[in-house]
Image (cartoon, rainbow over all chains, first blue to last red):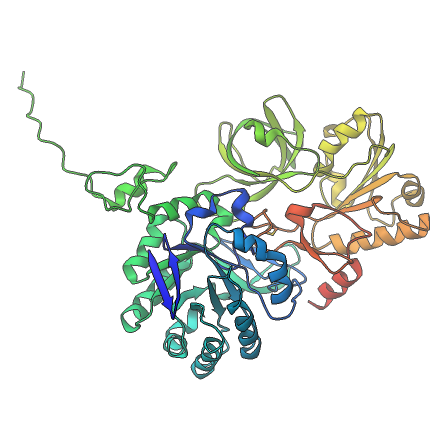
Length: 309
Length: 255
Ligand code: FES
């Protein structure tokens, strides 16, 4: 479990496994398919001060072992989205964290509004990769001044090392490392190059490395995000220094793994080998081989050799 | 909405390009109507990463039949992970006696389940296969169906009459042809019928769908009232008088 406290407010993440922004929808769309209460929190899709339209043209490009997505971050703007989803957020079995995007002025206005809404447990700021460290510090500080809510800053993968200290200095209570990086790929249907966010299991080593670099340097918790598709992936983030993790595109590829990962860190046990760590249980349907690579087989019991005939 | 395992019981090659897979599925996944679909994962690995959209073409007692291009390879007894049924059934009107189906550069598979119900209640149906759609094997279509083939939309003989007589029209075109094809069809219908009433003309939107559940927002369709709704949950068929085709076309031309 991870607790993030600001003033009188505490965000309790139990288990320390969340649904990431951009993957799970605005308010539990996946509740029709999986038990979202097994997660520690849900981060909404990005919300801006004013309405944004969906991107036009190709929005999805399948990649080898991944996908590039360019949605345009459509949403109705903070006030409309709040009217539309407040009841669902209030009824949510897990804390709801609103992911905000926009200019510093927009973010400050959104934060001041969300600060008054009891159903919101925390705010996550999407940090644009074009910002300098100075701008990030000023932006986070500006938002911090508007809200007592726990504030997470989601950093761009390739700038995370440069921006982390600035976000922490600005008043972020935790850093999410990292947002899916931007890429460009050719859409096989239209033949055009499309820019967007890239998702896939191969992102994990990149993000784990950055978490490992930053964790010893920062006094605030790091939440690992990127390429997690299995409890072992999340373990790698924890071992590198993350205190919680966010899951994104795994929920599209294999929704059942979200539950498996959440349960792996909730203290629940299904099958636990003698000598296994407390969080190591094998999710249903999980091939045994993958586990055996992680947990050395116990030495065989001593059986006397049969007498030679 | 279910995620379940299904087993490929039989694979039948219908033509050089089309195969049909008979899948043993659990009862909740057999509760579906024409227009609904599945997102399937066929491998334990993440390559391919996205699920494939599988379109049921027939329902049996314990199985469903889906149609897939032959460039994809499957094996009998192969276990697949099915998410669905997804989307809404096609809004086929009870009063629709003459049905016009248009497959533009796309296999007409998506119509076949709906056709079963339409033909069972003695509706007349005409299928127009345009461009690549002409390669679809005719023997895989119900014999009661009238089939018209055209190299191009413009060379579709008696197009005006077909559009004028139909009680309901459904068209399918793959992205990126969908918007221009549906725009042209809507304009034709407006010209031929003077006014296009609601629930007459439907376009089927089949963008790639990462989640299928309305969460990722990658499949939004823009409506006339300004709303943007996911094709995966609110489609795949949309009343073309409700879709903001003009703006969507203008935007994608500038994209
Ligand atoms: S496929 Fe994700 S919203 Fe439709």
